[in-house]
Every structure is written in C-alpha cells, then in structure tokens.
Length: 357
Ligand SMILES: *Cc1c(COP(=O)(O)O)cnc(C)c1O
Image (cartoon, rainbow, N blue to C red; front, top):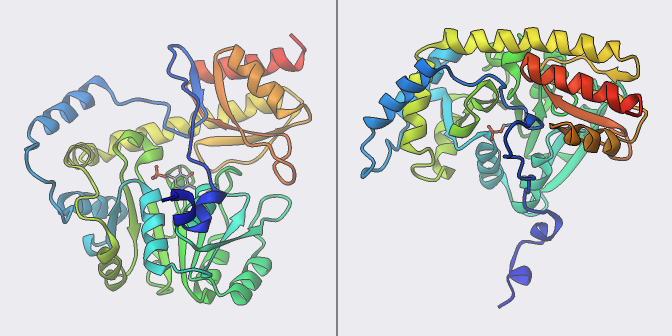
C-alpha cells in the first residue's frame, strides 16, 4: 500500500497548513486577521454559563436550528436560507464535494484566498485563477470571459478580498452572478468592516450564494461559518454536510454572543477607527504604498525585500504576514489591524527598520 499513489493527484500539489508557533507571551499577532479585541470579562462569564448548560454526553442538535435562527436575525434572512459550516472553509469544501468531479473547473480571482486553490486540488477540481487588474480591482470583462470559456461549476470571489483588502463593485458582482454558468459564491468574511454586503441582493440570481463567518468579528476559535442561499439550494447541499459538523460548545457560545449584537458592532467600529489611524501612520512613514482597506487588515508594499521587514518586525515582537511573491504581490505585507498599542509597536518597528536601525 502506498498512500501517495492511492490518493487523488491533487494531494501531491498541496501542503498541509503550518503556522509558526507564535504563542510566546507579548508578541503582537498581526498575521491572522483575527479581531484584535477580546471579549470582556462579563461576556466571558456569560459564555461560561452557556457552556455549563451543554449536555456533553449528548450529540449536538443536528439541525443547528437555534444558531441558524440567531444568524438569520443578524443578517435579516430566513433560517432555511442558512447552511452551517465548521468555519467557512468547511463550506467551501462542501461545495466542492457536492459540485466536484475530475476536470470540473473552479474559478476565482488572483491574488485571493490561497485556500480556494488548495481545497479545489484536494477535491479533484481544476483551479483556475483569473488575474485582478493592476490596482487589484476586479477585471469584470476578463472574469466574465473566464466564466464563458471555462464553464466552472463554482466561482469564488472574496469581497472584501484577502490579501488585497479592497471590496469589489457590487453591481459587477451582480452581473457576474447573473452570467455564471455554475454557482457563484461571494465570500464576505470581512464584510462587517466594509459597510457593504450582497445579502440584500440575494434572490436576484439563483446561482448567487453568500459566505459569511464569525471568525473575523471576534469568534475565530469557535469555527462558525454560514452559507446563505435559496432555501431549495441550501436544503439540497445539506445532503453533503456531515452530521453534527458544529460542536455543541461552539453553538452555545455563538448563540450567547449573538444575543448582544451591539457588543460585536462596537468592536467592529473600534477596529475601523484603529484601521484609519494605522493607515495614516503607515502613510506618514513616507516609504510604503498603503492600499485602501475595507477589511480588518491592510496591505502595504515596500521597496525593501518583504523578508527583511518580516524578520525585523519579529525581532521587535511583531508578527505580520509576508505575502510577497513574484508578480502582483511583490514586496507586499499583510498587516492585521491591532490594538493602538500593537499598531504603535508595528509602526515604530517599521520606522526603525527603514532607518536601518
Ligand atoms: C479568513 C477567511 C475566511 C474564514 O474562514 P473561516 O473558516 O470561517 O475561519 C474565509 N475567506 C476568506 C477570504 C478569509 O480571508
């Protein structure tokens, strides 16, 4: 038995996700696009209370009904329009499982979320990346051509996009959704920071599905994602969902958190304020190209090798994501918005490195 030879060919084209162990105390973690503001002590007490009521010897509620109701209220949709995932990545995998098959294509912009390609390969689909415009806007004509030529079963567009931080024109997304021969997913992982969502346009095109997550608004540890789409589509896709994919503790805590949307919104608003201040400070350094952001992170480009900034910042206790590679992202770093203190350390760190200190 040789597990490599037995596997789908795509498995040899990917690597397992490995992140450095940055758990040492005091590091400013600006590399994962988590929300920098933790829950308050009061909220933590509420969550603990909710967890004590979970019967741990029982399977979770297989329908996820209470959580779907809470999310439906948040997004002003019906619970029957929601499919729950163990993070939104599980829902991307579920879509590829349901729609997949060798030589079927998945189309997405480039640069974008690296997991689109990885999940396509591990599920035996053919990944096709369509370049964004040089300013990272969606090249609608080029994307429409790819939909026409490749006839993908699935298209994935993150808006706001990761790692470029910009959102795309909602009218262009609607036009592409009307044109797509297969399903089209608008991945709104960062929509809470952008003031824009295609949720209100759902139903406009039957192929349009919207992907949301609680990961970027302060609950990354719970692994809660949701796919929003027409009830008949959601009911069909539910056949491909593994039973009890969301654990009972995560559901209990998420429901408790969603009872106080104002607390979530206050933190999102605070991060948007911190983002504005951080971007101004980065621009003031004079040497970086700072791209516009509709997300909880910013993309910057430096003339210096990105590795030099990455290493220099790590020496100063700040972790960022080096996304530099030849081509559109040459010299680019992705920086999650941190607390005022973390952002201060970041900016001072970059200043020191640029001065050669
Ligand atoms: C972070 C991120 C996700 C989130 O994935 P989860 O599995 O919900 O944590 C999805 N899409 C994009 C573009 C992201 O950057």
